Length: 230
Image (cartoon, rainbow, N blue to C red; front, side, top):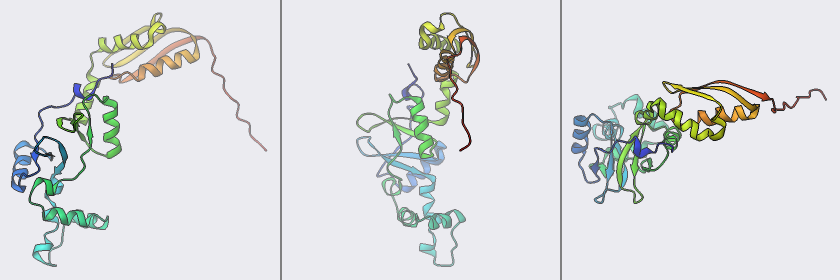
């Protein structure tokens, strides 16, 4: 079975209610050493995420209060140029977590495969995902660091799964695992069978690399010649 998010996620999550004040959010970030907090409604449903950047919108838009002589930081000016000025100005007036947050939040579920969570992070360019149940309630958080835990699977566990995945093809093979690196040795009937064996092994969670020492009796891989000219 592939490891699921629930096997690696953190269940103790610092979160705030949507009605929490600006000062409460800032104090929590500082005291807990975090850069963002999930924002929840009264029933623990995830509404969004409030980050340091959301709070700093007040600093970036100080010119609203101090006049034209104030020059915002470069990051703020770039953000304006990118067309997000309206959102920044709205957040600069926010007083509660619900008014300051970015929504919707990027989420996953406890039963999602670790590899699926990794792909979501990559797709959205984020370092963590909130984990919610079927009703959208917060159950945990999973970070890139958490996902690395799959590479700490014990070598005997990886070897056992490799033999299960390969089935009868593994019967005559020598399979060894050291620090997540799998070495496959032995003789198979077909070249294509060897390629499939390596591919299946590479897809096992926790496998760092596969060293292919397989040989085959028959080369059933047909190379199609490339014809040039008119």
